[in-house]
Image (cartoon, rainbow, N blue to C red; front, side, top):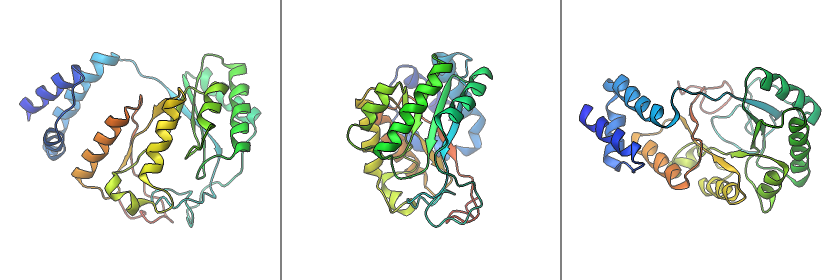
Length: 248
């Protein structure tokens, strides 16, 4: 494993793609977890030093989503006990953002439940970005609104958004097992729209939903092909009232 990891560190520093067999070997080496973490740390320090960047999320709208993503407490048919509310005002979002910036946040992510935004929703986000920027001009704004349609990414970029967040979540082969109301291709299409509009793409995974090692590698290579600037690595927190409630 040490030889494999040294080779992978070298490839990463040269920005070369690992082979599929190498990626699978890392996942099957669970007993070497600390060695894997140390190897990843070498790559991280090379590119980022010891810096961290504090981001925060502002939930613009919660619950009542028409999509049926199995992991989500806001999904269609969920009986999870969560807050449900329609859009908060730009002024309320700006006040929350100001507190976060004063606490050290460098990026604010404006998040809303739903399949994707309508024209009026984009206008709300444009107004919210303006309100946030009025108090904190240097803060980065990331937006996460679901699937984008024609022209929406361009409007967000023109309003001052820096990034768009839209996770792939799981592999294409098993995506239909997790969600039936939209497809893996819908998600990759949205990321490509965001990137083409000049927004920094942010896309990652949710692990722990019953996927195999092969699924994880498939997802990793799909993300590498899309080349997002940020790759969130999330782990499932099972919510009561969702189909994955027992997937600890």
